[in-house]
Length: 227
Image (cartoon, rainbow, N blue to C red; front, side, top):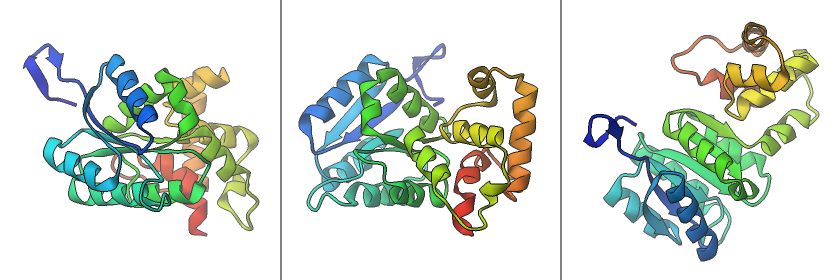
């Protein structure tokens, strides 16, 4: 974010709204994110309260549970869509108790920029949570590694993923987690130029043409769903 906090040398902290009906988890998230340098501008236990906070505070990022009152099904997901529609500049990080690939794909399908889907078990690792918030705030995308593994592991007929080599599938999984080429090269212990080559090959095999931004990194994971 480019806003300053009264000093040209000190940008304002990323502003966050949190929505979860579990008060203890919500308070823990708020405390952890504040300790990591973020500004928590509001907390909500349900969707109406979340929407009111977003309208009033215009946070940079909304962190919300998928399942919220009253039915505890998809209220959080629907709220995320509404927020993205009304406030396109607001990034969304959705938290889920379970690996629900359908919800993740529905959230990411239209425009994955500034969107994240993370399992709640990750929030016990503050560094992972903070990094995910930073990535979506900067316009990146984050998909939980467990979700990526489930997507890549499912058997499909005539999937474009079948054309990928084992190494390319590894690279694709790390891409979907939000890793940069440099981070992937460090993880796999290979030269960054080799990773660049793998990424280009993955895009070509999945039929992803060049586009503004870096959306192809997430679209590469989602492309097989269009078959």
